[in-house]
Length: 308
Image 1 (cartoon, rainbow, N blue to C red):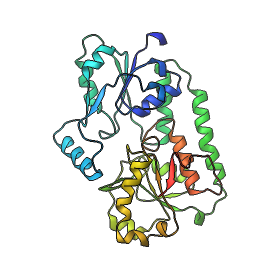
Image 2: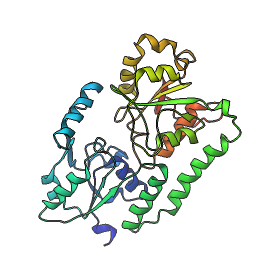
Image 3: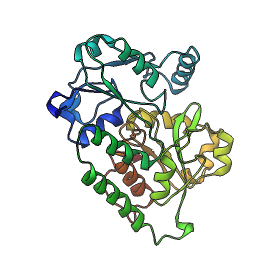
Image 4: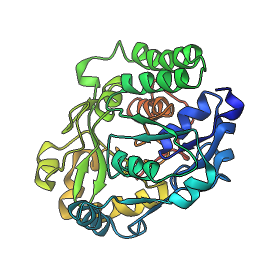
């Protein structure tokens, strides 16, 4: 199949970003309602819609998600009529998190109902940084695109971070809590603990490669991290600031070491951190800049992160 006859529908933002990085943006004919980067794909038809109100409060979103999952309903619907019209040759999806994007089962069901096409489903399942490299290589192989230089460049940026923090002593590596959701309180996991450690921090509460765990408020207070970074899934800087301020109203908040030393940060968790694609390397650089401003200055401050 030549690249001109390839018609890709990407149902996951990280997948869309991988395709674009591989130079395949022009082959994308449809996207999910969350695929918004790079900007040139924003005019592509939208093939999914959420069954919940993403503008609701964090606690309400959480309850709605649980209700949908308990009713064995996917959180997102696929617009099969749009899919039918687009006649894709390939669909990129994921099998990692039913809350992050359309479930794999839902995609299989939609594809089975198509009359005019039988697209190949490429399912990504990233849990750690190495999986992202593997996904980029795998997607490259499917479409006969050489990913070697792209991967070398991404890995080189990771190595630069590692080399620059090598001289730091253990006492110079702050204990870091990354907050992925505020109600209920959850800490970021999967590749995030790995990124924190690569950026010269010591990740608290979460295990690399595992799902994000809930965190008791009392545990956060008792552990008293050096640094707290908010990176809620799906929220930009402004929305993150609003969410974080709910927690800062609690009386114990002022006693925290991170609060007293002015080391509480908000990030754009939607563009970075929660998207398993090439921009996880940007996310690493953002963390490095937050944790060690004396060593790193990439220029992300003000757009990707701010002080709370």
